[in-house]
Length: 263
Image 1: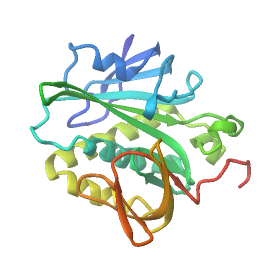
Image 2 (image 1 turned 180 degrees about the vertical axis):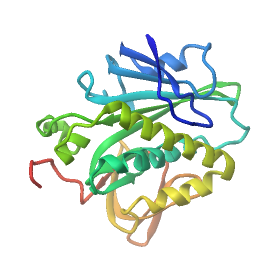
Image 3 (image 1 turned 120 degrees about the horizontal axis):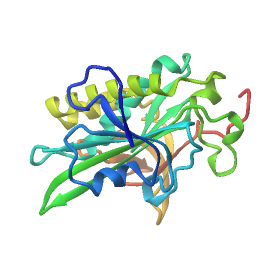
C-alpha cells in the first residue's frame, strides 16, 4: 500500500488516494475497516475478487482498468442512497469525454456507462448501516481503459474500452484525475440540490428513454418502452397498456451489439 497524490482540487473526495498493486476488493477494504475518513479513495491495479452487481466477477488484467472505490460517511438522514449511483454515472460520463475521441458516451440504468453503446464502466454501491441509518457508503467503480479489442469476446462481447474504441492507449492516471474531479462535482451537486436534480441530469445523458428495451430481473424478462426514471430512481416501463416500475434488473438495449473490429 502506498499513497498517490492526484494534485487536483476537490470538495469531497480526497485527492491523496490509497494505492494497491493488488487487493482482494477496494469496496471490501473500505467497508470492513473503520479508520478512514469521508472522501477516502482507494485504487487498485488488480483485484482478486472484484465484483459487479449480483455478485458477478469483474474481469481485468493488471494495469488495464481503473478499479477504485470512494468512501462517504456522515450522510444526512433520509438521503436517497440511489443518488450516488446516478451521480457517479454522471461523473464518469463527463470524466471520460476528453478521452473518447467523439465516440458517444451515455448512461444506462441503473449503473452502467456505455462508450459507443458498449459497456465501458460498471458501478457498485454498497452500504454498512447502524440501526436504520447508513453508517457508510462505498461506491466502487470499474472502468475499462486499455484492454485490446480481442479481449471483448464471448461473455464480454457487449463490453469495450477506451483503447478498443479509439485505437490509442490512455494514461490511466490522467483518466483517473478527470473522472475523480467529475465524480466529486456530481456528489457535491447531489448533496446540495437533491435526488430529483441528479435524476434530471442523468436522464439528459441517457438516449434510451423512449426506446424499446428488455429488462431481466433474474426471475423474469419483460420487453417494452423505457418511459422514464421516476423520482425514486425506478425504471418506468410501458408494456402494451400497462405501466410497470422496476427498482433492479439488467437492461438490454437494441443498440448494444457484439464487438467486432471496425464496426
